[in-house]
Length: 310
Image (cartoon, rainbow, N blue to C red; front, side):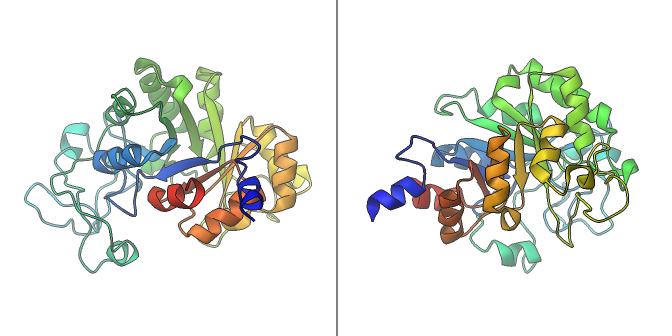
């Protein structure tokens, strides 16, 4: 029984399942903050997954939403922001650095979803360079970075243009010497295309989802999705792995409930790695590991490490 379990997790064959801390360790500490990333490194994750916006003065900063979230952001006086909050791209870095993102608002949806999250008052929004610097510290153990650009073709005025975003991110990665320790991922594949023009050696990740709350594939709609850099799923007979390969990505990252054994087999035959998001329950992590995924993104890296590397 133990041998079967080990084989299912890929440990007998030597294939290590990659564990990525989603937004650092969102279930444990405030998301996309230095404390969350430090905790994920302490736990032993392979990869720090993070989100990226860009300030008005062109600095890549680690924040998930295009606009500041009133449930996660307080001003310099400690007051929760009132909606509508400003967009990140309307603020320069100095102004953005005044906000405190060290706790979530009591009674908010986020607080109910992550009741074990420990606050860290006084925590600021970090820059990409500051997060990458963690990888150079003693004890980081070669941790990698999976960097998601928060861009949408549906509201282009709310973020930097894809080519500007790509130029800024590649510039920071090169300056920090982290091109070979980073993956760049996005639902908007235009950014990935632009980044590869500037840095052909940068690994890119095609994110996909076909849910009512986010669908960047638009299967069955006429023409190409605005998210997929001119590629139409129908051209590939409905195959996401084939479309991801055509997009030039080395990794396909689907919503975890959408991956199938057949699609996984096809992706691996095409030479793609498959990293699923965002998996928080141990039984689902184990099932996906047995299915053969290459990596799991999770809000609870502590659970993943306990379940998958006992």
